[in-house]
Each structure stands twice: as structure tokens, then as C-alpha cells.
Length: 343
Image (cartoon, rainbow, N blue to C red; front, side, top):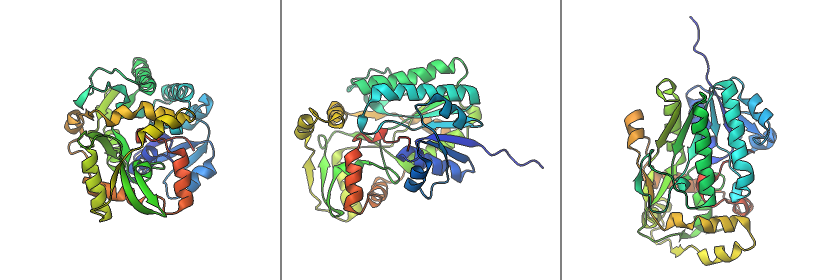
């Protein structure tokens, strides 16, 4: 009796939060997982336990992506420049390289989408077919990425956009709490509140999001050529997030302090990351949430770890020593939907 064929996934950005969790979720289902990395040895050191074969190559070099994607059934495009740096010069060329590789290999592209595509007043339950009207330069680039995938679908290139809010959870190199939690010597001192206490913000716990991706990948035969799903995740206020942090840390009196936006604005005069962060502050001042009903109708029960448990796992994954914390903070990209990058 013939053995079932082993499916193969190429991940571009497996050392990032989404890519790493996707690799783990797919490997659990028997997928062979490959990662394109500029320096495979460094990538392996960052993810020593990852069930991944690291392949030398650069996401900016089309021939490298094509070669790595040979024989792949799925390409998870989880690469973005860290710290919001040089988006215009890198993001679109990388997705075009992935599209070319998918066209030649027949693989389906998976793009982790975010809410940058929508205007500040888009609402708290945005559906997949809602109008996209980005308010920022990075939002316009994200729209262009998705438009490129949709246009490629007319030539038979398959893709799946799985849209979610801010990523957090284990395996996130520069995660949400690495910049929201004030610490000294590894001890939490305070939690910063980046927006009004009663304005909800969309978050996505990475293990749940990756598990959802794996379930969708298992249903390949039922997916349209161009598929798009919204992962509702945790849509909570800063006050609710603070309560979860306090509960996870058993610190009911952990102080909550305002995020220093004025310092970010001043710092942005000289620093590109801070300048780009200032542009994205609207995400914390208006409710932009996702309607997950289409996803639930397709996959059934959507994975949903309780908020306090998910926050606890994310906090437990923070670096314990000062050197690691400083290294992460120097490269923190601030909005955690755009963490993954090639190693």
C-alpha cells in the first residue's frame, strides 16, 4: 500500500513569531517544513528546537526563493523588515518574488494580514469584503501586497490571507510585552497603556493563529484560488489587558502608566522606527476589530486560549537577562503584526 505523500511548506521568516508558530503547527501534522534564511546557522541558533530545515537564501533574491520553493505545497510569507525600516524598498519586492516562486511550484501562498488596510473608522467587526482605505503609508503597502496576490490568482496562483490583530505569545522575538511591560532585572515594574482604557484593540495569540492556519491548510481542496479569512482573536481594552497581566503575574497592584507618546514623537525626528511608530498610534485610539464569523463557519471551532492563560505564556517567554532584553528593545518593531523577518 502506497504511503501518503508528505506535504512540504516553505516558510519565509520562520524565526519570527508567526513563522515559528506556523512551522510548529504544520510539523505536528506531519508536514515537512523548510525555511529560507540568509544565515542558516544563525537561524538555527535562534530556533534550536524548531522542526525546520534551514535553506540558505535571501527573500530579496528571486532565484533563491524559486529554488527554495521547489516541491513546496505551501509558502508562508512571514517576512517583514524589522522596526518598520525601509518598507517601501523591501516589502513589495519580497511578495513579488514569492508570487513568482508559487507560480512555478504550484504552491499556495499564505500571507498573515493585519488591520493596517482599514481606515480608523472602519468599525469593530470588519468583514473580509469590507472596503480597504488605509490611513498610512504602511497600510497602503499592505493593500498593494494583497492586491498583487489577488491579481496573481487570475493566472492560477493560489493564496490565503489570514488577517489578525497584534501578534503576541511564545516565540515572538520582539513581542507586545517586550515594549509594553516596564521591567528591571527581569522584574515587572509597570505596564504601559498606549491608548484610552476603554478603547478595544485587536490581538492574536500566536499558537491559536498558527493552529488555525494549519487547519485551513488541511482543507486545501475546499479553498478558492484566492481565499481570505479574518481571525477575530482577543478584542479587548487596555484595562482588560492590564487585568490579564496582573492575573498572570499574580500582581494585582501592578501599576499601569501612560505610554510616552510625546517622547516617541520627538524621538521620531531622528529615528525611523519611532517615526513610523508615531504614524501608527491611531490603532490604539480607535476600535478596529475583525469579524471572524466566516472563519468559524469554515473551520468550525476556532482555537481560542483564555486571555489570562495566553498572556501568561507570552510573559513567561520574555528574556530573563538584561542583555537579551536590551538586544530585543533595540530592534523592537513596536506593532507586533510585523515581526517576522528572514534570519
